[in-house]
Image 1 (spheres, rainbow, N blue to C red):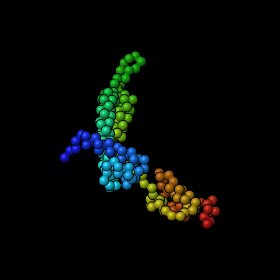
Image 2 (spheres, one colour):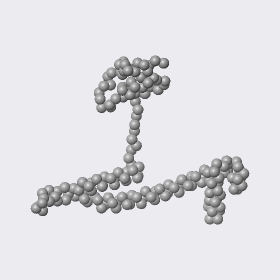
Image 3 (tube, rainbow, N blue to C red):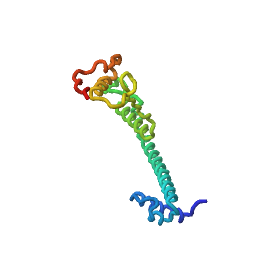
Image 4 (tube, helix red, strand yellow):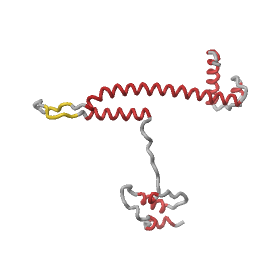
Length: 183
């Protein structure tokens, strides 16, 4: 059964007061929260969660509206730039004779930026994965290590394009680090 508008208004008012008290750090069992009309600490907690969920749903609806408006704006801009980016235009020499045809590269750049903006707005791009690995692609050793070993690991990581993964850097320690190995 749907609550009346008056009841909905009272509930919204009570929830707003509850949220203000919680933001101030007031516990659910505090008499000020129970004086709002909650039977118990548990009822106040459940209503607080409901208020947050309702707010989240309202926020999601606003985000969807914003996203739709931005997509419509991007559509209009893309429609304006597309012909210059896709249809070759004549190229004239100084005598005003046509010497070739070419697409407008500035328009192409604009189209690409609009497409990139749309992908970001709609979450179309895949997240970038990064993986940290130790020497030879193995696991990164974790535990107490000395400065010399850290330097060795850093040297072993080196340039990812270099093909020097055959040598184990621990076999050839840096002589300057010999003092760091003493404990």
